[in-house]
Image 1 (cartoon, protein in one colour):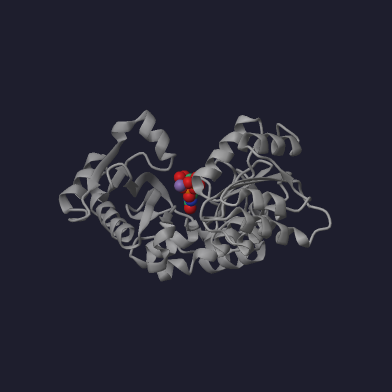
Image 2 (cartoon, helix red, strand yellow):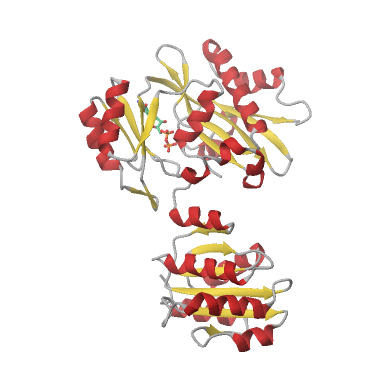
Length: 379
Ligand code: GDP
Ligand code: MN
């Protein structure tokens, strides 16, 4: 689960990290009210899960409440890298003297956290890593010892952070690490951590991603889940317990098992199509789950045709076929063409049961090629 900036800032602020005062707004009127409360210059920031919002026009400064209204009106409804902006964070503008990067992330290869600091904050950290690798200092953290004092100082000084703010930056890094390890997080990042004209440090941006599999033991964070999504389809899918990612193409893809769905995605691409989503209904999928999955994908206006790829193991093909039939009962005519590939346990029975509303293909290649064709080929 990826929290919105305003949610991550709330968590960071509660833990003692300095953040600008601010609140989230869904309308220009609300943005004006918040700006009035704060007084003085405010930053109005699109709450969408994409990097580089600033460059894309999703962050604007406003010096009066009326101006906050105007820029909020511009940013709300704006599409940034394919994501619709439905909310803006209105917060006290920060007086930027310098921008640092502070982050804790998981090194999956090493199975350990990495604490990182860079004196080149405010820009994409991956680009910094490529162009100026020496500007990023890193320390791996042994989970048995947590982030030790000397390691913390080593990254802060190693990154060339000014002595005057080094102690404050160390404090922020310590808190960030504690939050990371205590919240089952994947990433906790502040970019930029701003050094103000007065020499204070303030988190001007915040990223906090939590491992979905651990949400059951993070009840306070799990409560933020509903608002954390910025795609209604992803919210609905999570509610149904599906593994779902919305993509930008027009070929809907459903399958049972992550590997099978990935393979289908690759094949759609191979045959010149463009995937609209990744949807794994999981193993042992019963009729009602099949129905929910189909409804979800049919509802997506981007989808032109759907391929349903089932490998029957524990999931019996006849059961899946019943699910598909049941899901399609409500339609006299299918909203979008559906190509089904059923193979494995009880495949014969399954194929015989299937309603004539769907096209059945024996091979995966055949099913994908046919679906791409139905979607109108290259999109
Ligand atoms: P991102 O581009 O999506 O990562 O959004 P950030 O929140 O990191 O903001 C990008 C850049 O906008 C920052 O590095 C700052 O230079 C600038 N910015 C953001 N908030 C403020 C603010 O309150 N005041 C000023 N002057 N600049 C800001
Ligand atoms: Mn940022």
